[in-house]
Amino acid sequence: MTDLTTLTLAAALDGMEKKQFSSLELTDAFIAAIDKANPHLNAYVVTTPELARARAKQSDAKRASGKAGPLEGAPLGIKDLFCTEGVRTTACSGVLGEFTPTYESTVSGNLFRDGAVMLGKLNMDEFAMGSSNETSHFGPVVSPWRRGNDDAKITPGGSSGGSASAVSADLCLGATATDTGGSIRQPAAFTGTVGIKPTYGRCSRWGIVAFASSLDQAGPIAKTVEDSAMLLQSMAGHDPKDSTSLPNKLPDFRAACSKSIKGMTIGIPDEYRVDGMPEEIEKLWQQGIEWAKDAGCTIKRISLPHTKYALPTYYIVAPAEASSNLARYDGMRYGARVAGKDLNGTYENTRASGFGKEVQRRIMIGTYVLSAGYYDAYYLRAQKVRARLNEDMKSAFAEVDAILTPATPSAAFALGEKSGDPVSMYLNDIFTVTANLTGNPALALPAATDSNGLPLGLQVIGKALDEESVFAVSSALEKAAGFKAKAAKWWG
Ligand code: GLN
Image (cartoon, rainbow, N blue to C red; front, side, top):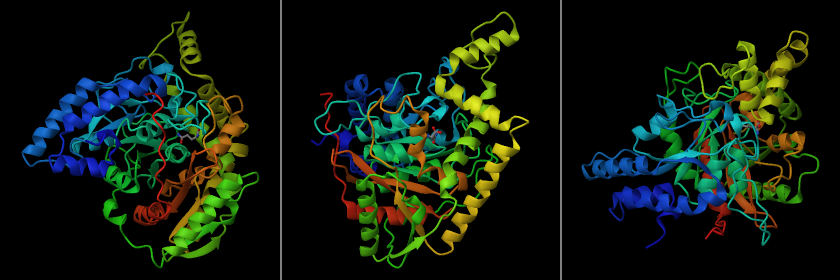
């Protein structure tokens, strides 16, 4: 029998429907795989095998009685940013201690409503701040991928590094993730998986630990474009508990994957050709353009003139919102408390020992750009640039149906390689942040491997609310790329 953990979500659901195996068998296969791999990869920070087995049994009973939901019995991993009822949720920060929510986030709740089984909580950068998963309170996540025969530990990217590593190492069928500046797409690109950040407002933010509320969006990391469409279908939808949640009806995302892209116009933005970009990334992009042409698309050079300001704008807006969102961790109501000699002392001790260095850096940048003397020069100006970026997107989408770019400016790097240099770490997000600032949907898919055998990803950006075109173009590119590379399971 094939190793059940290597199946796609679609194939696993099909196999259960055809009674080839049960959800319990599938779940047990994942629990065994996690037991073996997790000491090496550190992808899960909490595992919930008993809960998973109980849920799987319920799913099997539901399926037997003809009441199976769209994801019935599918074992998934949940990023630790999503509050899960009765299961520790810390956003991988020390400041949350052993915080165990008494409620379920809307997105994870939607997945469970549709039958998904939770295997555990996935590691991530602290409060989703990072691009390499090295800021986690629980230690870095290791990617299953390696550079050729070199056994140096490679980053799966961040902040959803646990999600990406787990999906790519077959430790779940798919995972939830979040993307504030690229945290779904960059880890997906680094690990040969697929990740989509939908239009801002498609997924409810209720019950997701907030980082930068005007940018945060949930989305899936999955093995294929079709799997990502199926997961998004369950995760998304209007939620009155989030005032920024969109009331729009959800299209059939899975059906969109098989739509022809013949006659579509694909925009290629000049500004995504950055200095020092490795030749391999340029080659990958050209290859993507050829694939789109072969599928019957018209290719159009476009300009997104304010692109070079997107990264500095992001690194003002995101820390500003974070500094405000993180003010609530004062040791009074949540998680860990380190007592001081008075109330202020307790605040100070709790925040100084609970937050890691990167989070402290963001809080300092955020409070600085919002402070009286600097608000106009930084925060207000960043808001103005954000409006320009929105105009760039609007005028581009008056001419094209989708935009194609590389997902990241390089392949994955080794752990420790960039952690001492925040600016070089921030540069990882150069191709992804714009879609967060403008709210457009964007998907990263694996398209090739570099000379060391590491995955490289392409990014497809769509018009607001047009995930369907994003899925259609991405599926066509996925088919053309025929990406089959897989990390060897060196952990035995
Ligand atoms: N890497 C970016 C940051 O550190 C994006 C993080 C994210 O999308 N959550 O802010």
